[in-house]
Amino acid sequence: MDKNFFVKLNNKGVSLLFAIFLLLVFSFIGVTLITILINETISSSEELLSIQAFYLAESGCEIAITDNLTDRKLSYNSNNTATINYNNFTIEIKRKIYDNVTVFECEAYTGDIKRKIRVKIKNNI
Image 1 (cartoon, one colour):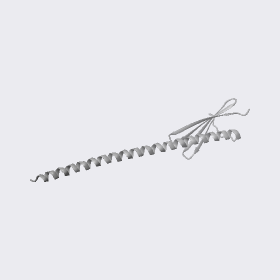
Image 2 (cartoon, helix red, strand yellow):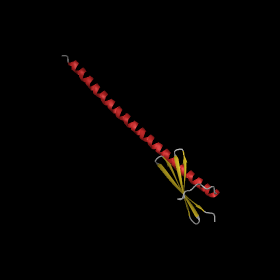
Image 3 (spheres, helix red, strand yellow):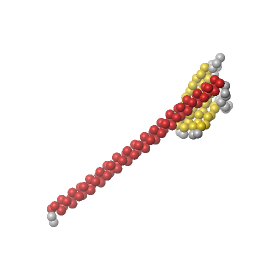
Image 4 (spheres, helix red, strand yellow):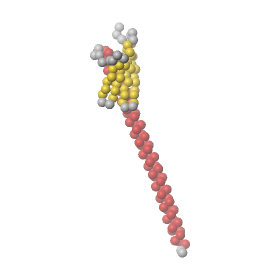
């Protein structure tokens, strides 16, 4: 047999192994990038829900303060809690009245995310 024949066969085997190795490396890089992108998407959507919950809680406190100043009377239950539902969001307003201060605790829920804001206002004497 010709010596060049074996040299050519060995080169073909090395090329095949190198091609498979490159395929594995690029596959690993691709899977890693996809995993990172999925995690970032989930994280950013949770952050968006958190921001929405915060602003909803803030809006709940503004509604409670306006209601307190104008005597429109939100419908508070026996626990001094009022609930506002809008689409997929829920705002709970808890009112505590002291001698010269009213405290509103406003909690907003968006899915599993909850944000709470507490506001104290001075009562008119």
